[in-house]
Amino acid sequence: MNSNYYKTEASVEEYIKLAKDVNGGQLIEKLNNYLPSNSSLLEIGSGPGTDFRLLKRNYNVVGSDYSTEFLNRLRSNNIKDDFFNLDAITIETDKKFDGIYSNKVLQHLTDEDLSKSILRQIDILNSGGIICHSFWKGEGSEIFKGLLVNYQTAESLRNLFEDYFEILLLEEYNEFEDGDSLLLIGKKK
Image (cartoon, rainbow, N blue to C red; front, side, top):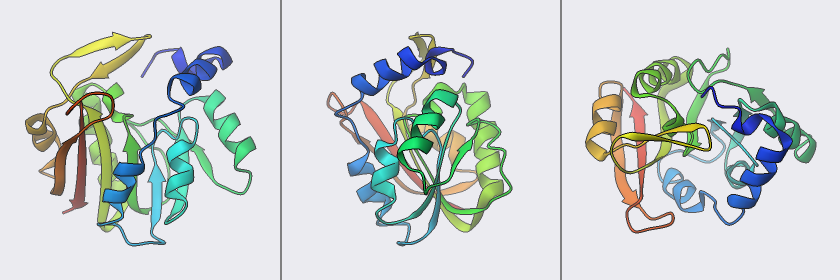
């Protein structure tokens, strides 16, 4: 994720307006079926904090983002909460979590970098930890506003995750169009 898109106040404002009606409520409802309430949870890529606020209803959430602009906003709007400056690949933290959540964040990684992120997620998950990640469904990749969008299929996600996670749920859902997105929930092996 070497783009400068989320590094300026103007681009962060643009993103917030673009995503104002989008949240991961339906994803979080599915996560609730697999991760018990009050579990510790890391959100990778908290962005404007929409999903963070929803996750806080059930979990002890630590938010994160790679963008200083987003982190500044998150910290000023949620002064009692913890937010880490984390890269989605290296996820440099000593903390361990019961779960890890991301909503259309890991799609900005190449498959090689996603594989590195998966290995790091294994390291920071407690035994039997749960992941919940969403991706745009499709094949190939493109650059959108300077950001890589690496599309995934159910098969490609299985190939990336199944050696490390028991796949509990892998299904299509609709964000803007029928079946445009994929949700993966897995349990650390």
